Length: 193
Image 1 (cartoon, rainbow, N blue to C red):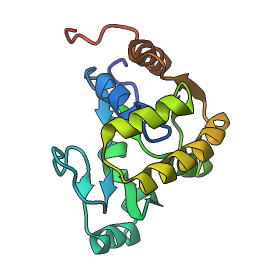
Image 2: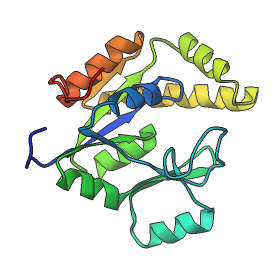
Image 3: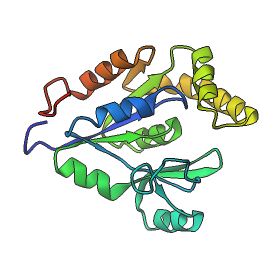
């Protein structure tokens, strides 16, 4: 992005296990990309850091911030609240950055329905057996939660037609390159690889 140019929001979503978090981490190697740190009421997982991975809030804090209009979108997912804070988005766009939102399909479609300008990219798994293998390898869910996630993934997959672009993550390097191209990050960012 050239100096003085307004930035834009780029929304990346897809089913749990599609690889969207890994792709987003790779995109953040480019200094032109600024990551949206979502707020959530879910419990912190091992290795996560408040303010880096999520803004971990109590349910009461989340509801207060929502009442004050601090979120551009929020949703309940698996019994936890998640939301995208408005202030950081506006700041990044004003500075000419690509503001990367990694949010669930429900949140992305909510933003699109609200007419929030941006680029909406759906990350799809190569197939549902691979998705099951990825989720099982995480070893973070009970069998009941795993089945619920797979059922939800099938529902989310049907929504892919509402996005601007669909990228199938059957090869990580290829998927990252595709998303970079869609975002206009093909030109060097001045940061070594």
